[in-house]
Amino acid sequence: MDQAEAKKIALGAQRLINAYGAVMEKYPIGYVDASVLPADKDTLKFAIKVMWKLSDENFRSLLGGGFVGLYRFQNGVGPEPITSLPKNMNVAELKKSPEAMKAVMAATQQFLDWSERTKSEMDSLVSEFQAFEKSRKGELK
Image 1 (tube, helix red, strand yellow):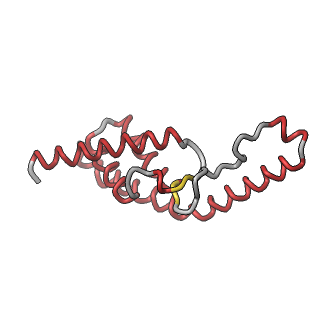
Image 2 (cartoon, rainbow, N blue to C red):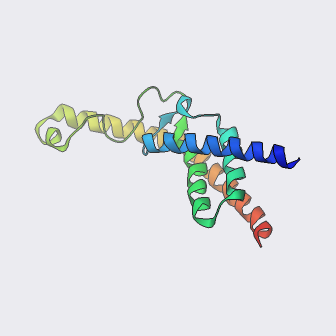
Image 3 (tube, rainbow, N blue to C red):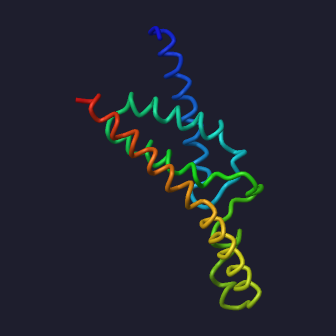
């Protein structure tokens, strides 16, 4: 690969990471539909690895979190993120309304169901990124 091609890949990776960072800021918690991602997960993983090689230790830590955080983006979540609390719920409602408490319990159960569904992907992403980091540590010396 020549220098021009390497620079083009690095710039593309940087653009994807910036776009992915904006998505992570917009959806900091919960499970989110994968359609909001700026690219498919494999492409984002590649971009993260490219940027990791070009970054300092502090940014590498953020990239690792972003790599593992891909597990939160799943097909079929729908237009609203899945969190452990219903949208627009406040604590005062819980004290007054049994219906509000039922809504919280339903949201929590849905969140736990997604947590169970995504656990193996999260574990796989952790393992993959740890193996990547380990394989690259020797290149940094």
